[in-house]
Image (tube, rainbow, N blue to C red; front, side, top):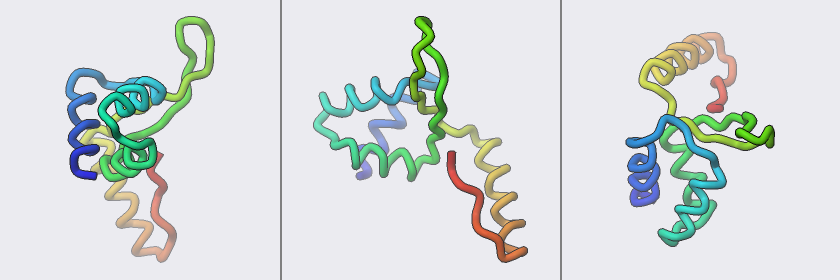
Length: 91
């Protein structure tokens, strides 16, 4: 899975967000399974969101969470833990 993580990190060095369809297309070329890519996505804290493309079609995009967003989530989760509440989900 480390290679899949590196694959995603390499993609996000050049773009801030990319369609999930494009990621899976590139991953297939590199012989990564969809499941492995999804596990690497979770490990990196990549966020999924739905938006419209140029033609108005709904498309799922992936965005690597910024360090600021990551730190904020960690603070929230620490507060939730003190209150014995479940962790904030990764989006």
